Image 1 (cartoon, rainbow, N blue to C red):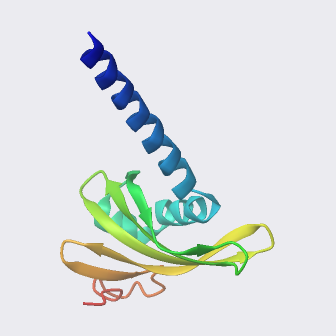
Image 2: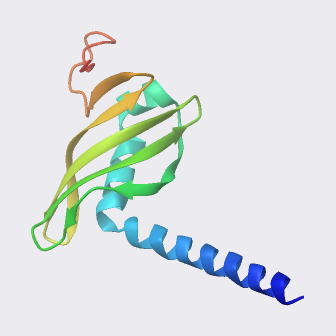
Length: 124
């Protein structure tokens, strides 16, 4: 009985910790990046409709310096990719400057201003 209670407490503490870490790592810089990724045409072409994002968000965010370079997984309706995004803080808002989408062993510049060919945004 005591072991079952300890296991239950451990599971509850783990779930609470994961929720806290996720909410902290997905702050305003991430929210701006997520909005950008959802609306990016190249991301939709490669992944389909963006359904969500992975749990982990990595990379430095300097609120005081106003610079963020973060990366995270993107789950699409067709497949999953990984994105690295650079953003700067302007006033109280984070503005995405650009990024790189990695999917299927290929990398693409996002946003992509060139639409002349399917490979115009490909980096490798």
